Length: 197
Image 1 (spheres, rainbow, N blue to C red):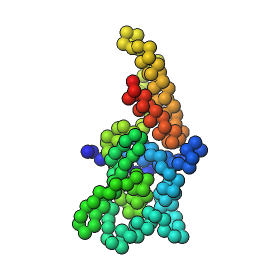
Image 2: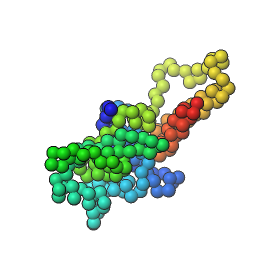
Image 3: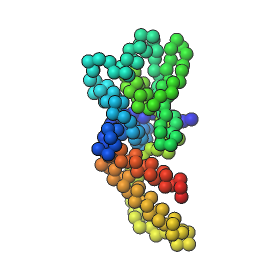
């Protein structure tokens, strides 16, 4: 399993998601971004730490950090290593008394913990290939309207390809406008369409 190091690009919200946020991760040595939809509480916990705002009383993730410090538990890294039915899974890799443990966690909680421990974030290459988004750059001289050979396609395939082209164009627009929540939705729709065709 190859791991790609990522960092937090930011959080964005949309009025269409009932208080959910898109947490945007980006490859440190690449050009892809990975949007993950998270809840408002977790988004707030991440944002407060990123902005170095200390709440008057510890939040859950701050409490975890305080307990971990008291018992000399160190968080080595966070890895987002699974994706099932559009749900991401993560592990908090921690060490105490020389023993390393991998603890299952939601990515939002794992990242809220990571920012408190200054722990590096990783995503498996497989997940980045499946769910990462990258703005497609047209090569110089590339023709927008390349005709398809009629003998190589069927009418339903042509319709699917036309829909995929339209969705990819919308995805590129969403990325350019930094509307990552919409980009994540479009990415998932493209994946579903590709897997059903």
